[in-house]
Image (tube, rainbow, N blue to C red; front, top):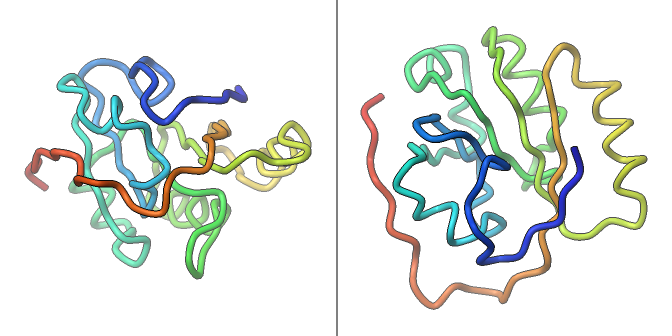
Length: 140
């Protein structure tokens, strides 16, 4: 699935179904505000360095959202860690608009192993949000 979303578009099943635990790895600026404040999703924020089998076991996400390219890692690094953690959910790679998004998605899927992966393009956002999104802590 390849989608283009707007920064404040409606939260829907692109990012998970009601009740899903969504693990967001260093991608808070790329996620639409409506998703971050959706009361039906359990969102867990984490840095990439924290993603290991123990963390994945404790948080038990159904969906993992991460940038296509992060600081010092990319989505294939995320997938490799998730595979080592026996993750069986869905991964969503977020990216700013790409010249050939279908080609990028095809290449990622070829290298992501058994993980189901989608790509969502988001428009470039302003350098900083005026107010941070309200987040809920979840046990884990």
